[in-house]
Length: 103
Ligand code: FES
Image (spheres, rainbow, N blue to C red):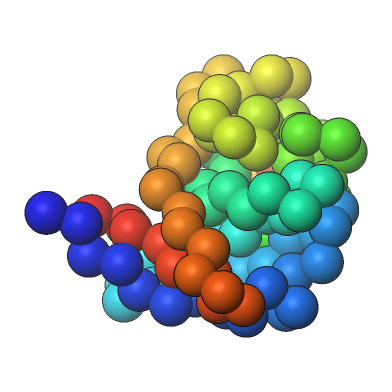
């Protein structure tokens, strides 16, 4: 059963930006791709550093530390040095609030 938790207001994370937040014990990187929101575990699969410190390049999240690239929508790794995906979580926008289900 889904457990939706409010993570941010839509205005907290404008298009092309990332926002790091804790949801319970899970670090979540909220990503805004042209007005659509996605949520990834805020831990790069390369060396466990925060993805939310990185940048958004189109629909790709680029890690600030060594340049690994991940699909913002799915968490799939798209560029070295990451060789594993990161978790992605369902997102729902309700009015001006963004909710995430980290399971
Ligand atoms: S920690 Fe992200 S690329 Fe190294």
